Amino acid sequence: MKLWIDDLRPAPEGYKWVKSVGEAKIHCCQFLRKQNGRQVLQIEEFNLDHDSGDYQYNGGDYIELLKWLEEKQYMHDWVIDSVFKIHSQNVVGRNNMEAIIKHNNWRLEP
Image (cartoon, rainbow, N blue to C red):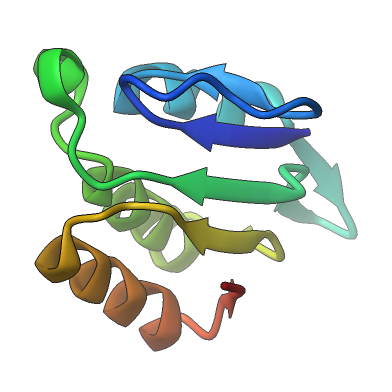
């Protein structure tokens, strides 16, 4: 499963369009599988915007999803081997999101 996380821009073919952080969390929990005693996230790719616009009421801007995943990784031993891509035009938001991804040694692709 590939998630396209954006409030306005429709998902390209092959992606599931998710408009809020809350909705993205639901998909993550649905695609979590136990493997060798650990919870492994079965999301192939997260392609993220930063600003969630009218959907901010349901979890905040999309950086909050990265913070939540980080918490799940460290507090609940989730294995996150997804690819992360950022398509946001918000330069500060993009830099902040990239910092979280790099800090966690997740795969960041252009």
